[in-house]
Image (cartoon, rainbow, N blue to C red; front, side, top):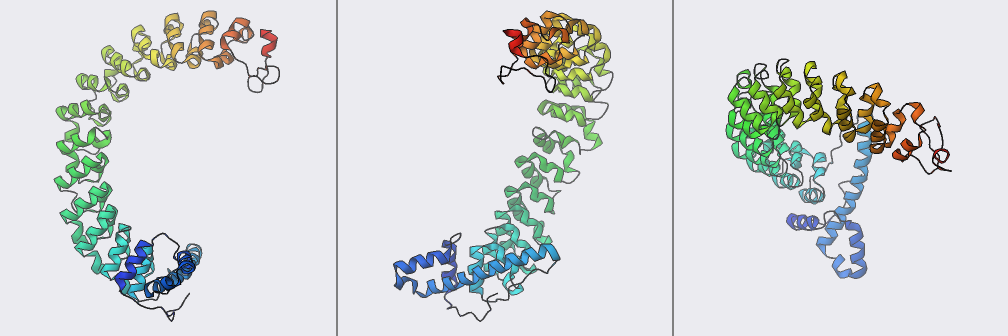
Length: 418
């Protein structure tokens, strides 16, 4: 390490800070060499000499800190502290990179101007400020304006300061978790308006607040999860929440999950709500049909007796052919239903069809035309049928148009098609 005996001309700290700020991110030593080759008189200027001297020290310190970090993470070496008290030098370093504050002596970390310079780069450097500055309102405001998460390092009294907390959550709503104002309705509402998930950070009583819930629910259905049992059982509130986001139905009280009107409201915009409905409601034809119209995959949660309902099943398989798997056996033999399912998901629907239809030429042709890979599931005796192979258009131009299924080479397309 370069020792404190290094001879560097001292100038006005603000001038050095201004120059260092202007040169932030640049290689000062390279710039100095370039300037020297162009204008010797300029490089001899005192301010430039000071900056170049500081840059030499910075280069050596950076190399040493890199080595120190390597040791810190391997053998628990204590964190290095740089033994310099020259505030002008520290202002230069902090302007270049606020992270140098980590290695400063306590007297430097008590310097309001130096700490504020670091905080304008990254607010969370407040962690390394001395306690007196963590209680300084101006310093903390500077920190949370740059990064709301810096609130966690502020003194307790400032975590209850409304202006500071509002500034913090405006920058990052997650800062609410560090606040002492989780029970403040205005603060929480401001956070939730910015990000609905902030409701999880609010005090329990505000997680059941109607206005806050309605604000959060559209983006975050889970907002109802932490509400009180009274709110989850409130028919009016749950109905309003389901209108804004039907997924909130999952967290409604059991008695409302058995309420036909509430369930209909939910499944009409989120078919999967049927999964959370009571068993009796899953046997309601109108409810199940409404669910399948919104999302055919809801058929999986229908009562067994409704899986043999032609209208419900054909509604479900129109968009999700693979839901044929959940149809009653009788409907897996229904040609219209199977063909409808194949049009949306040929291979899975074909595999779910009744055995007699899987051997039906019309069904096979429909399946392989939609998805050539369905040919792999066709009965072996029909896999060489020229009409079916042509419909599948299943060949790969490898060698002599060789057709293979995995490792089992059944035949070559040129043998069938030529």
